[in-house]
Image 1 (tube, rainbow, N blue to C red):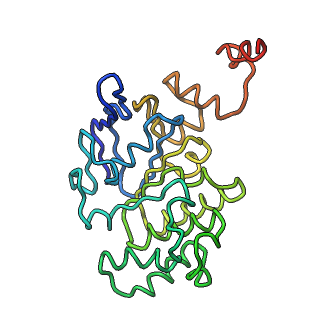
Image 2: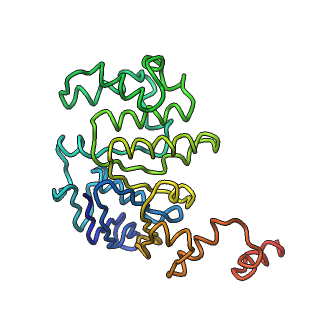
Image 3: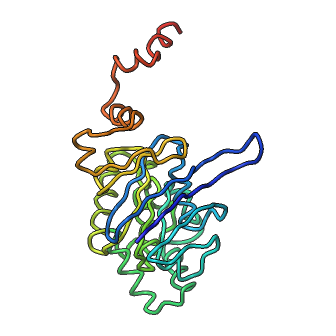
Length: 263
């Protein structure tokens, strides 16, 4: 369903040139969820922005469902591919009700049965018709993210791009949103790419994982490899170890503990 070949994204020029994504390649089968994990600034969100058409300056090849992508996308692409963003506070228009937010893509794409579609998708994300005419400021963070998911689903896409969909939420709400996404992926048979810095989130949703570091895809792992801690790349091993929590020995080896004690 998704093919990314030698994708490169740069920002700036001359001495300020930054290789945000430096020639990465991967493929995602239909119905599969592929995770991109790595520390902040490694380029994983930039990959999604290039894929969904928000970043039009990139080099390489991106193909979705057999169609090779160009920098500018048509309406047909956006009906097939939708994205859920990290910030549920910034991704919704503060003066638009939930109903208007959901009606807008229906109008843009000229779909029929608008009211039925809105009611169906609200029920699908666990909100219901009572939330239809509320404004974002009347919703909790988790409810806002459910609206954002509903907006992505209302066009019945085949591919869902998820950019840290739970990182801005309270821990108590994160599991609810993750379980919702897992259920939706199964019922709608979606192909997904999930970006996160949290290995627990990645392991909960993904079939395979790509590890990014400084714009490079340094390693791919299956979920079985991840659970068995079978990482080959040194950075991946450090990432796995860091996900287990603070380790005094590793901190000492890295020189972090000595610097802290001196301070």
